[in-house]
Image (cartoon, rainbow over all chains, first blue to last red):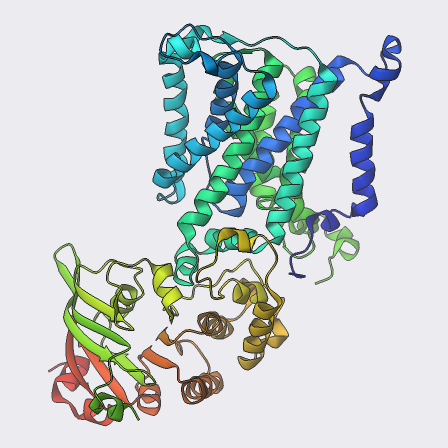
Length: 351
Length: 255
């Protein structure tokens, strides 16, 4: 469909610009291999970038249900948690009799994969119930699921270690996690770009725009919603597994962090709900902004974030992508013209 | 042509038996019986709140039917899902316009195609060229070709009605339920819609059921009219018979 304006083009980044960014990101850890003694790239930088890739992936996943399908999920981090605990339990050695021995002491890769699959299966079961709810009811039901799962993990002590948490075999290889999360983020963004171009992606938007109409026009909305839901859950489950291995320790409070969902929502909204590039830009912006704000205004960083969120909602409801986009009129350029009428002749956008 | 169909003993395309819908204690529909035959253009009229849209909602399965049975092409659809009924060849438009406002006219049309028997895997590609071909033909047929890349939300009310009609036609349905297709539309465009409906009926044998407040439109278009009042069928007959029917006049103008 030619009319689906490619979001990367709207960014004026272009194909070569995109390639350059990707190559640069791939090259960042290389000095670690060739000249480790010079310490050109610190572990802390790699760690920061890894966290950013994780957030980009999570925000993109959230965008699939929250942005494209229009089901605003306030508990998406539950799938991150299920993936993290799935991986953790398979890699660890829970001292619980009924737990089969074949399901312990796995190596990381299969454990991560199964963690993702468990999250996806959980999403299918959960989605068949919660995706019947609409609007705020769905959001609240997912928030409830998230809290319930955290408490469940706390209660099932023999398997999860309860509130004491569980340790995973420590493995401190920053470049590995860097490349792993970079690859996953790249694949997820590519997947979202591809989904947006397919009929499947368009049907998700149709469901967002008018679910009754879509159903009446022959779209099996339940099937589409659940499919989008489990794809997002699977990917977030993988991220959870990677995060657990990288952190080497999980407990209910660090895994089921309420802020994780809020982050996904905020980042996607800042970047642009329902766009491919939006979650990427939003996640990167907020991550580095938070880094700067946090290091300079330790006491005020949450206040600053709150103010930012208010500015997004009021000033640019369609996010950065909406401001950049020439088709969708957002209020920020209009506000600018209203406040600074002298510049209006230059900033006037062609209709 | 339609009266012949009935006397031929042809099976109805759409048949309702004792269709009832209750909202709590309120009977929005109360034991409505009707039959629609292939190739006819029928009208459904009645004062506000008489249950016309509720009947449409029940037939297209947007709302559950409390009692009674509905058959489409001889198959019972009383408990089927809306998308299954759509796959069988029943399409409708809505009184309150339902288009995908943030998608373009073309995308709206492409997403209203025939999905019958499609697996999700088939949807993992852009739209099929045949679908695009059909969409652009229909867009031209409905005089929307200047607006093909416009967001549906930016169209005027009348243009959105035309788009909705196009979306209903996309899957090549056998029966089309039009809910107030002419409300808020200027007279010239109404003539276009009339002309298009007649053409579809004559050339492709499509069956229409029209809900209308515009009696002139019904009189021009329909061969048979059903009248609903307080959820019950008040009368049925040709437009001429209906306008002379005392019960109908009483229902519309009061005693």
